[in-house]
Image (cartoon, rainbow, N blue to C red):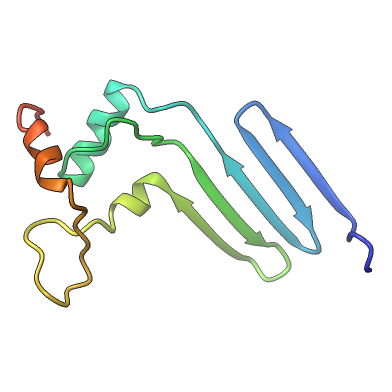
Length: 110
């Protein structure tokens, strides 16, 4: 069995990270977005958000020696949601409850 590589763990109330063999992996877990934050996201995205949106959460992976960095954020993930009608083969996904959920959102201004 091999030994665990040398690493450094860091933690704060809303963030955790590990640095190991040139890599840095950081997560940020924040509270559910408040109404003004959700309004801003909805305005940017152009569609209603789920009831519980964690708009400030992210995962960041960085390889410092090469400068490579990739981040997953709420906004960037939601920008990938297909808007409008779905067409066979377009890669869009529609969950079974989507129509009823959208009807419940009709009164929400975007």
